[in-house]
Image (cartoon, rainbow, N blue to C red; front, side, top):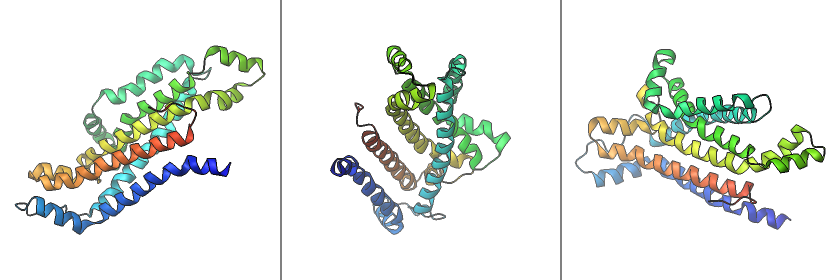
Length: 252
């Protein structure tokens, strides 16, 4: 029993080592400066000097984490409520509202939020929240609706209450699609958070935007490479967690 549990969680060691390697990489400020100076000898400012890369990464992760907490709270609640008896009449409305967030580009949401929230992280979090809400909500709804009607009828015939059917039948069926939605939302948030400096927030988008303004490819790479690695690492980590938490599901 213990051996089976150990084998199930052993793949998590790979992402854990990946995270340690990632933080070691972004902590090597002098290494980045030396490498980018060698690649771009004509550039006088190969790295962003007002903040260390580690500090920018911490800001990026904080912004992503706060946005995802709001997305999870709202997405799980909306998805659950819209599939219950009281919320089912509002299911199309929930779908339309969450789709609106991805209809507008994140930049448009950022600037629309400026007159209300002003410069700072609140406008960025609002844009990230609106953009990432759809995958989580849709994943919950599709998962909870995936239980066949005859299985639901059989559960009722066995005397299971609505709450018991939810936790024993519907939620295990919904877990794979819910986790897939969370993974998609997280990767989107990590990538889209690079736009946050446009409204006065930090993160790995700072050197990217500074490099674009100064035509400095070294600065662009200083921000773009960690963002790409971070997105891949988040995707890998959640894929491994999906396999560990839902071994009964077929993973793509």
